[in-house]
Image (cartoon, rainbow, N blue to C red; front, side, top):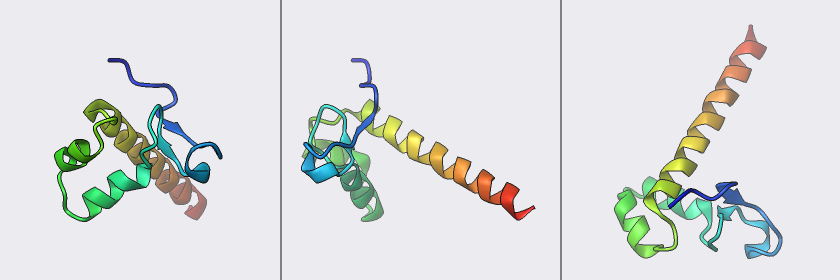
Length: 79
């Protein structure tokens, strides 16, 4: 199944503007909370079956890329 585009939806119609996995009502924060709590992604996916593994991995990749970009900008600004 292809990934939705965009990966994340932010709309006042969905949980008051909380970022959610597109085509679901599952907050992105839930994934980070599970991982931060030491739970494997498999546990998150069992508890939120509307989110596919590919979708969760793509959102994590997006977060990673955003973090790296922010670090790069901070590095350039510090030079």
